[in-house]
Length: 181
Image (cartoon, rainbow, N blue to C red; front, side):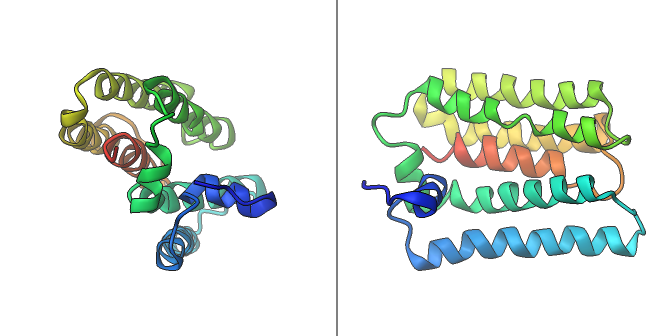
């Protein structure tokens, strides 16, 4: 798999260098449509987010919604689960997503404790998924994704406009990235 140079090479690293036009369109469209939905909802609820909050939410919605699709396309799976990728690489990919702390830093409605709970849940789940047999990664990943939904519904409250965050992050990382290989 050959990566292109420049910004196209960065895109290749996100979606896989063999991504078809349709796969790329699905990744982009899912990110853009979901971002529009979240901002439309924020507008109808008069959430009055600051510019920093808007920029963070725009980045997160594009990355997470687009990533849910990118992590599950054939080209994405081939790229992210190529033979050179090891368990530690997959764990590092998950650990890189420090988004719960970014939200706690920028939104008063998200506490640092809630950020730590969500981040810890995602990392702990990732460790269990990766330490288990490859043949069970998909079903175990889906169990932990469902647990992420319950975590969002019962344990943490990220506030209006951010209700989607925990379930979508779990879907991207636990039910998508880790379960797709």
